[in-house]
Length: 637
Image 1: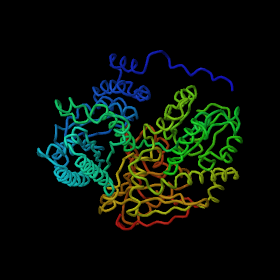
Image 2: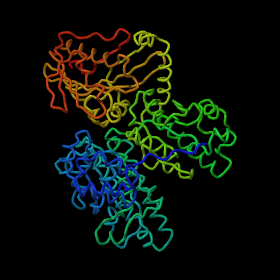
Image 3: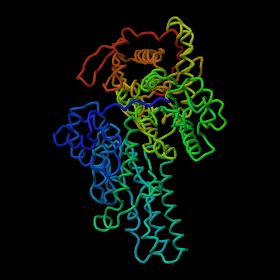
Image 4: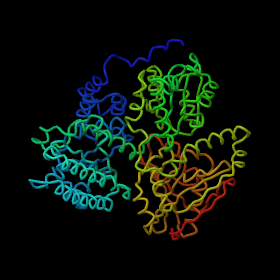
């Protein structure tokens, strides 16, 4: 195999930390804030924390004024202990994902007031995410000495009931996401019990307390509970005894840093930046060796130490795919040998059927990724690319900066760790649409093959047999509607992100309505692919938002939906329909949607444009689309 060319130069020998420090000293962090994400990409540990300390000094308002497209998230931090050290770590973790932190830090031990009083400053800040950081002192500060496990059990039960009530109050008072956490039990508490029977009882009590915390999220859509036990199990110290005693900082700085990393994954999801597609290099990543040189019998998949490591990596990828992560391959190989080994190798966990697209060839990897994005009708910001070649990784970073690049190396036992480290595909809830996503992208490939057989798009659409159903979503569909607002960036007219409870409130209100958009065609059911959010104000109907999955662009579905809404508005006595478009870096393709359908632009402040339709002429839906509609239960809309 020919030697790889040198990696693209990065313009100098300075480390990312050096560049960031120089930007800080020259007061360039605000004007160059979009560059920060790239600089932080490979930072970890103390280096990343130092970066967070620099970035936490920035005025968020200045950054937003200079870069309106940068998503700013308000995160409220409250809890039982001293939590100031959490803010630099949070700042850095959000910045790694291209986000800007607006932090609100509460006073020491004020979480009960913060979450229990709807008039508190926490609620006044209207946080998208509220962190209630729990530690062992939440329980032990109220356990009198001397104590037995039964005393701890009683206090823990009281605290669990209190936290359940606070979570319910939060859901009633705020549209954001509340985050609790399980609580590590430091040895200094178990060691105070001199008999092992009592220690075992305390361990059981504490695990029941943590189990109760985790189960609080089962029926509370606006609540997430982060499990800290896996972090401690990886060797992160739960506490620094001196900081705990002297400063009442109950969780250690390393644990707070790991906690902040988990919150960063959640914040990315809340901001609509969850990834959808995992693109894998093959040689050295999915299997050991080089297929073209070693042949199918020579690659490492099992039967050796390294082979077992590659098999373990494949099992993890298969697990991700089972939950809606779309898989694709980008490999410098001839395509037929690749397909053959995926189909026929007896030890291969990942088969040809797992991949929606296999881009094998000898061109640059960034071109393969761009072609895959076009084929799936997705932006490259939805992609995570994994490769063991530093050259290929740097080339993709340079040519496709929106692609997230994950580095793996010649130690396959660590491939799983590198892939899972940043929770790129994490979300609050899995829906039925998530489980069906892979098969639906395969259907999309079939549609594209079908398109190739027609001389015109009109003929293709006519034969595609598109059906659209507009109706209020049922209770089981609320998470999917919420997910569309959270994860859809290209066809999202205002990018207002909503939790399931907020969607439910709009459905229940008298003057608002949510319409779910379902579609199907000759290749199968596309599922719930969009939503319209309507609001009636006297004789005017407002389209507060319109979101549509990128999988179903350009099939006449958006025209059908708008035609239906306009026609219904006129039939129910409205004299006009208003629509809003808020510009982002990702939704430029829908900038002309309203004007293309008879709306007139009436205002534009450079960020948000307002449109109005006078309903004198309502366009008919495209003739190739079969429409079924129901505006119940709010027919007055």
